[in-house]
Length: 445
Image (cartoon, rainbow, N blue to C red; front, side):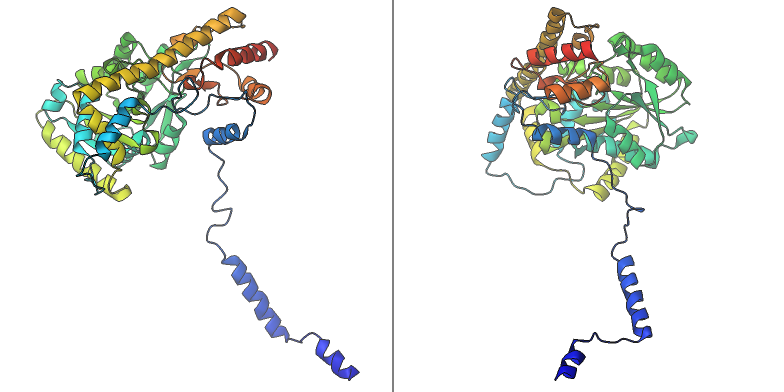
């Protein structure tokens, strides 16, 4: 019995050839677990802005101040659904003929046509002469992408230089969008660190030195991230340099009406370039000025220069934009476009929207004034005129990265590391706290 027990507990014996096959099989199984090992697909860093949002959300301090994300907040630090959007939503929900069918590839025509008028003006010959091709997009980001893709595919005339010049600094996503379609990127000076205003001479010099036919991306208004816009006279100087070098303007318009509260004023730069006969493209977002952040309502517009064959040009461009759109998203989302279209096509609702825009822009302006006044009262070292000189949602404070980190660690104030703050994050309850925190940090760092 003892020998039986010993025999049954002994491990099985395998031949050397079996062990070798087993080892090879294990190795092959291990090697084929993925086609995407770390050396092929390294871990990407977290998006800095969304990482900042996550850190702020996790902070339980009652004093925390969120100045990171670019979304409007009311004086109670809450998202604000525009009253006119609520009315449009009610109209749509009570429409017995409402359905959820696909939109055409180019989008909702009643939306895109009014969107073009909003930028170019209702009486412009640009529209009556059929010099505009418009496509509904996934908000402004999708519009920039569609434009980048179009230029990467078709901007090749006369061996044109395909480099895209971006302002330094610019919205971080611009770099990724143009790089992803294979267009080379360069920068032009924009923010003057000493004056905390526009480096107009540096900008003009770089545009003048750039190869002819370069693509120049311009922020139509409320420059992100600096809040610094050219004056009307400076825009004319920029247009003159670009015309001389035959550059191609690509406008990114994310804040029309939100910047100054005046839709026409905020479209002034675009209209100037159109009036001067430029052929250009525009990316347009309705996230900020309608508060339709998650609905992703936007448009991309191609504007042809005045010429005998204009209609044929826009028709051809529209046909290729439709092909690109079809291969990427097929059809744009419908609800945000319906909301905007309902407002843009109703005179009373449009007037109410303009009032809503003045409410938002007015609160931002009031916060700029309150913050500047508090710095003056505290005698905070440095000059702070740029707080009220800048415009729109963002302000480039001039704070260093070390000061930004200190504000976050000691005072629970969250902003991007380059010192950009979203003015919408300030309100009558926290502007004093923020100003005192900055004052202390500036004196100590």
